[in-house]
Image (cartoon, rainbow, N blue to C red; front, top):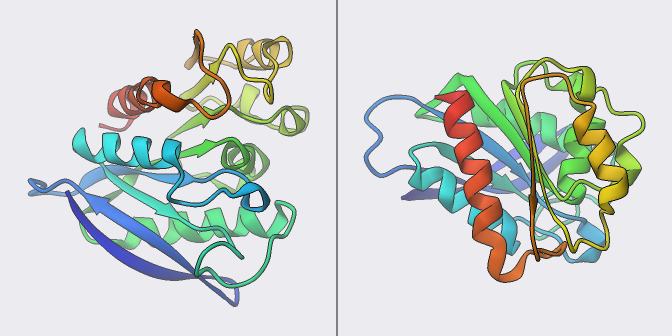
Length: 213
């Protein structure tokens, strides 16, 4: 894996990220931008779930970008209750498409917890994204999301012991999706995934390998 630290602008703010490419890439490859969990609850681009997905994607021959939302790590600014963070995702997608080796026509977007909320919240702004993956998406973002009617491929992965994302709310939401859609419930996994993190990462990697390559 080849990795490089990058910085990019979201409005007037400078954000930090890490870009990963397969070692053996000899042509442009598809890729995925990853959005981390809640900034006010310790979420950042080095989160266990984000890192597992990032490494698995690159191992499978795709590019990946993980980045810190505004106010996290060395990213400038402060938490903006999800409004500015949508702008951060837009900026991350824009810079990602311009990076060497990335096939800008084959880009996916994934989020974990709050990060998946930013995928749902900002969906109208992500018109050039080919496929979406949501890991443990928070219920407060379901009602106003346009994702159920979106015709692009989408994936939801959650644990059946997730106390933050009750399945009685998530299941009807995921089952309302227009096709193509995938919905995986992992027995025994909670919101933090722990030793089952690779199950989530493999589902996400398989999904993007099928829908971006």
